[in-house]
Amino acid sequence: MAPAGELNEMLDTLLACDWAVVEFSMGLFNVPLAQQTAIREQNQRLHGVLREHLLPLERKAAGQAGVNSNARRVSRWSRKTRCRTNSLS
Image (tube, rainbow, N blue to C red; front, side, top):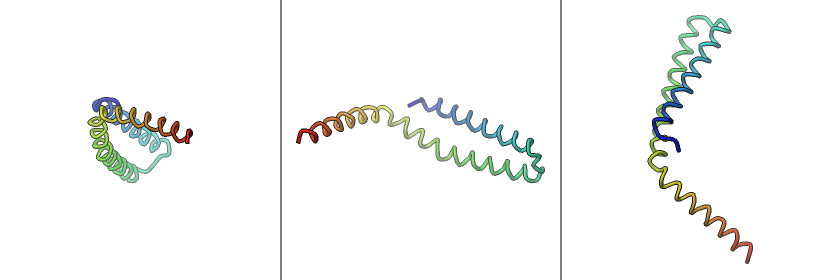
């Protein structure tokens, strides 16, 4: 798992790319000014919701990174062992 700062930076980059695509598309399709304002507001709300829901998940994942890596190793080992014992019976 990447450090929390890296994930936040990645989210910033993705949202900036999204904003650029929206702005480019509005210019390309000659969207009227009134609709441009509505689209920008909607896009801002979308970005706010993404931040609200993704950043807590990021913090939770960052806090459990060490625990999860060991748990994954154990669960893989137990699955392999179970498969071997099931095939022997």
